[in-house]
Length: 372
Ligand SMILES: Cc1ncc(COP(=O)(O)O)c(C=O)c1O
Image (cartoon, protein in one colour):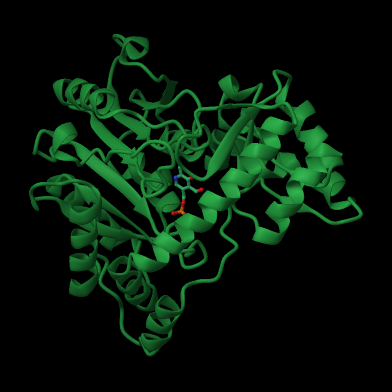
């Protein structure tokens, strides 16, 4: 490719700078701390992959043939059973499909749904950046809105993303709110995609799935719930997620994904079966995060921070009512790296996101660092 015209045609030109690259100088500052870096920025799991899951992966290592894009029969039934147990679904008429982690689906869903120029994708005002990136990849418009009145008469809304518990704010949307979104979208023929990757991490509130009967009204039409094993089972490195919901939409996704080679590898499918069948390791992991959350929350409050929402999920949404980059620097001088709220939308400009994903040892060192 050469010249300005060719550069304009590049798909990457539709996308913003990759968020985490902007944090490099703060990381360098934090890493200079004499006692080393404590990384509360990215939210990447640090605890071991549970042993039964590793065994399942290793047991499926002899996998010379192609895997099923739809997932093995064992995986499909493990996903269905988990959804029935966890999402409050009365019926079993939903479709299920494994994904290569959930980010892949979030990034490509608008394209897979045939959304494009002239269409609008609604994303939360403060949210995980990939919802907007996926819309831009498809050439669609992005509208940031938390309320349907803010969406108003916007033409051609084809997809509405909700994320409860929210990354980064930890806000949980009550069932009545979700129900309104579902009704609104159904009236307009839009799809509701609900990113529920933090659903199992409710601290002060129990989050509700979009597939729960009280929200869906017992029909999955127009609804997709997006799930991930990255945080529940420490499987971010395996790339293991799935989508469940409207059987027609899921069948459509499957058709395209077969052509495009979006297939979860056989050993990872086997690992997912083991992970989904077991709640014990997920409970243990949740308790680790609960303890870390208590320590970090107390340390932030003692250091004079306000904490908003954060009733569920993997993050604390904190503010000292100053520009987020100033706060990031304040932390970095103490050897602690946090994420600036502006990564998640302009409305996050005065907050930082503090992840619960550090080792117990590092989390235990945070109160003294922040007090210093
Ligand atoms: C809200 C949200 N959705 C999706 C993802 C992607 O997770 P994964 O691709 O590991 O399943 C993340 C990762 O941090 C997230 O915060």
